[in-house]
Image 1: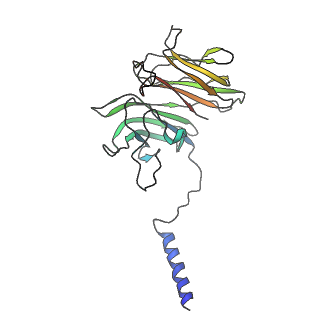
Image 2: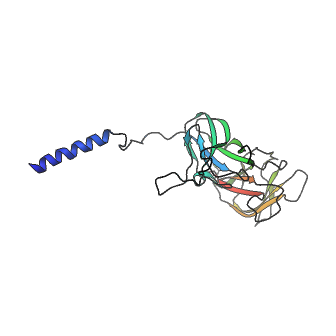
Length: 256
């Protein structure tokens, strides 16, 4: 009899718990159809968390149950380089300080209209202003081909260096020594089209118009067939050190 009463009480508690605000939620359903990737390329910018309106889109894992104060640091891509899913619509995309000091202060705010089924990248760029605590930002659409040719790689160039003139990205195959421009000349905050190139290992160089030497570059970058890549230029063009964090640099991030 005692055991019977215990089981009744247990089932009642479980039923009550299922109705509480801490009950396990049903998260099945369609995945949002649009996607955004988040880059912190703002020179000297603090680490941030990225938001779409008031929805947090990126986070650093924590084992304490308390939100990490690390955020996405300079030169890094949110969510390990993966896209974050979002419903199509009009948004204000923001980067907010993740540290305890100035916690959640918005340092960049970029309006964007996200289309159904489309992919985008948000870049914090330029130079962080320590007085106003702001940095540039811009959004580009990642409009790589819907039908992928798996015999080639696709590459495009994004220019996020505020103090650099328009640049053209060149790729030189380390095996065949063939060199080709990856799209047209791109100005600051601009993005080129995705260009199909043979898979292989390439030395990359960013050049000014009418110049045959690289303003800066990166060696031994691999592009695999059937994959899609964005080469993003970040940093301070006046820095000549080859090891400084804020040197001009070509970032390689896969879109697909």
